[in-house]
Amino acid sequence: MSASPELDRYIENLDTLIRKLSPAERRRLASDIGRQIRQANKRRIQANIAPDGSRFTPRREIGRAVQQ
Image 1 (cartoon, rainbow, N blue to C red):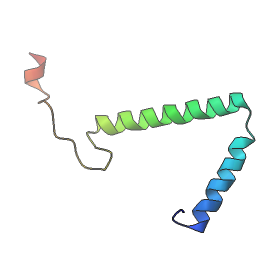
Image 2 (tube, rainbow, N blue to C red; image 1 turned 45 degrees about the vertical axis):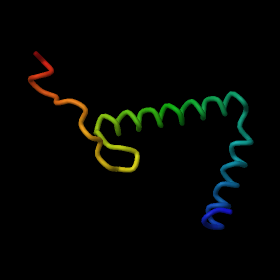
Image 3 (tube, rainbow, N blue to C red; image 1 turned 90 degrees about the vertical axis):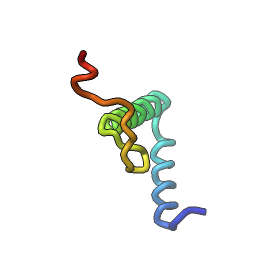
């Protein structure tokens, strides 16, 4: 049971499209999705933002102390 009938239709349509892909196309799609997720996570972590949108607690002070 999902949140809405519209979401169910969307998922069914997406599933149908994915099933039409060849195995090589599916691997390429999975690789592209994984790459995009890794890039988004890298940017989020560099911005010091947790998955829930809150800020991370700084682990160390960045500045002159680190450079010495």
